[in-house]
Image (tube, rainbow, N blue to C red):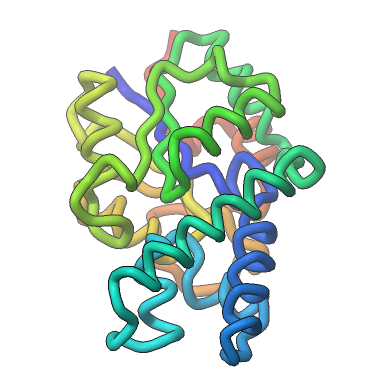
Length: 216
């Protein structure tokens, strides 16, 4: 059995931009200047706590950190209704794989309530057998924990899983989990730690052999 594990923000939905804009806003309010673009480049896929610590310093106390994460998700959920849009080809690919009865999972650094919201908005919630959040595991990406959790919930061995990721941290996590990784990147020449690179999920619809699924 082969399974496909999707990252969500920046792969299924164009919500990485929402993450970055909210984080940049919170940093600016506390005197830290960093653009949404730089946040995405450096920290896409990384757990919230690690992003805040990296930008604001390791001396950030636990109470302030907890408050920042809580405020981030208040703002994320407030803005999500108008900000969730599918990545090109994402909905079509997920529905095509579900029609083939391919085991599908979402493994994201976002909390489960946000994962559920995004999948509902995109109208693909019923296509996924499993959801896994970094909130449920000891370590976020680039640790492999969330991908291994998804594989356990799918009852599929990690070596039979293919991850689709846009963030370097997620690609590193997939490799550490012993999973094949397809990188979704804007620049096909960009060096990334993945087995295959595509610039749009439509490429996987047009060239399904990239997914290396068993033939019917």
